[in-house]
Every structure is written in structure tokens, then in C-alpha cells.
Length: 246
Image 1: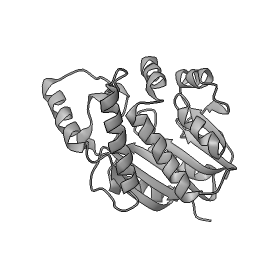
Image 2: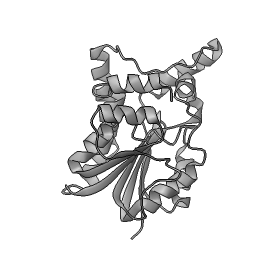
Image 3: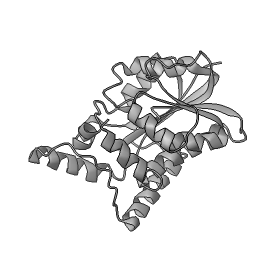
């Protein structure tokens, strides 16, 4: 991604609704599957500017990898320890190293030339019984200028993601779309952008209205909590939990 995008991420991640929702997904995942663990060995693949590694460090010893030097420079600025340059398709860790791996908005990117290989690498570095938390873009009809700005090339369907995780060796314990309430407004927006032939542009707003940001954060977190009781039939994103058999 462009260094400017990483700069926006670094400035907005602490409070912006999207990133707050991602961290909430991570917290829910760890609370459900590792409720009493405090000494986990964790890896965040495609760690970006490092804010999720910072969160994971509360649950044990966390590591981060990213292929971008710009991303890693922001990790250093944020004083995040144990991050290094590594491609998700060739992760520089030994087999069966981690209790859990998180991937938050990574596999959509054009740098992931072979996403199945990347999933296989996360499987390889997990300990038996370990889990992958996978969160990414969903439904190709939503592909638009924001994806282009972030150099995204794919958005997953539930069927495709489940199939690929299983081919990589995972037992898929959970899978659902999420962010369904915002699906229709975003679909209309993306269609209008295509009609207008507008230029690629990030939808992350550094100067978002605080009240709007709070509302969007509430909606996102509410849907995440709803995953305990139902699976959404569509959504902007998709979330899955894959377990490596013992």
C-alpha cells in the first residue's frame, strides 16, 4: 500500500470505528477460545502499523509480520516489539510455533499472489489444536474504489473461504459474514462510483464526525456480539475461525 495510507491508518486506528471493530473481534475470539490463558504465543500476520500486536501482547507474547517496510517503520514508531519483515506466503517461523494466529484484512491484497499457500503457511506455524482468526473483505459485488486504493484484488464468499481453509488443512469451527447492516448503503455507493467512473480513494476518514464514529462503532460491535447467536447471510466482511487438528 501507499505510505500515505499507512500514515492515515497510524493516525486513526486508536479510535476509528473500523479498527475498533477489528480489535473487538480479536477480543471476542480470545475470550471464547482462550478464556483463562495469559501466556499464549500469538502472531498477527500483515500486522500493518502494529496496533493489533499491541492488543495481543495483553494475552501473552505476540509477534507481528508484514511485507511492507513502511508498515514496519510505523510499528517501530509505535514501539511495538517482536515485529519483522516476512511474507505470509513464506512465514519466517518454524512449524508449530504459535497457539493462535490472527489475520485482519490481509488476504484481499494483491501481494498475496497465492492465498491458499498463505493459509497453508498459517496452518504450518500453528501448534496442533491452534486456531486462525481470519477477517477480511467479502462479496465481490462490493468491489470498488476503496479496494483499488488499498490494492485489493479479492473479496471472499463464504463458500470460497470455507473451501480454501479446509484445503489448507483447517477444521472450520465458525464462519459468517458480518457488517451486514452497512451492506446496502455501501453497495449503492459503490455502484454510483462505477457509474461516475470516479478515481480510487480510501473511505477511511481521518476527520470523521465523532458522533458518527461512535454510532458506527456501536453498530459494528453489536453485529460482532450477534455472531454468538446467528450467522449473517451477507455483509461487507467475512470472519472465520479455523482450527488445526491435534
